[in-house]
Image 1 (cartoon, helix red, strand yellow):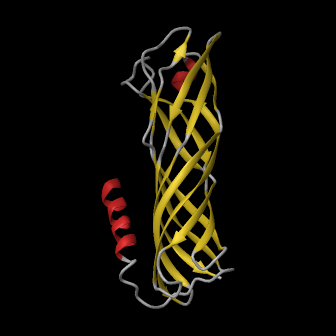
Image 2 (cartoon, helix red, strand yellow):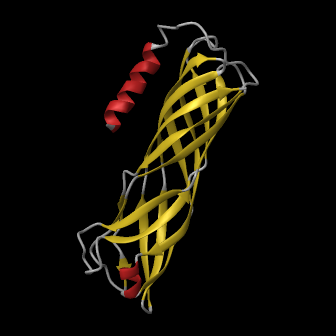
Image 3 (cartoon, one colour):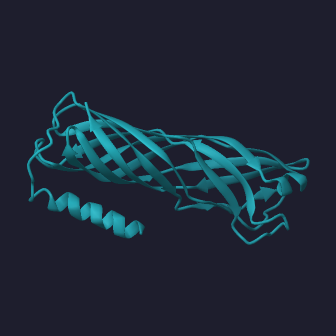
Length: 226
């Protein structure tokens, strides 16, 4: 699904440089607000869990879908600056091996917010109905409400903490005008997210030196131009 959606957006983007239908006008000073569904699908890995010794396994993070919001301001007819926001994403954190401690496959859970600022370039004439774009940006991810499952807490795991993350991002997307300033949007982003984890196992301090999340972020939304 990831490769199919990405390939379709890329194909639409470059094909539209040649085929340009008429309609929607993007101009310097326009503001576009989008709201819809955003899925964060981690392409994850981690170093091994250390708690006095190497436990010989890492962790994995599952996907989650939330309400996605973004606001874009056109600094020229062809360029905008966009802020990505969303309701908090909630992820289960799982062991990298099946039930290694006899407490179930799930280690715990966390929530995060991934605000991302992106500069986007639009290929078509500003009056075109179909508006494909590509962009690059910077992401800041903050984690909160980190906690172990009840079974792991009973086994002595406490004080889970994930550091915030800075990273680069890239995206490809497109708006399609359906009239009266309203459009349909689809986009795919890749965001570099890496964090360190600390916790306690009884009296022993534990760490995971690197949890690489690096999600693909898929959004389908309704856009409105002011």
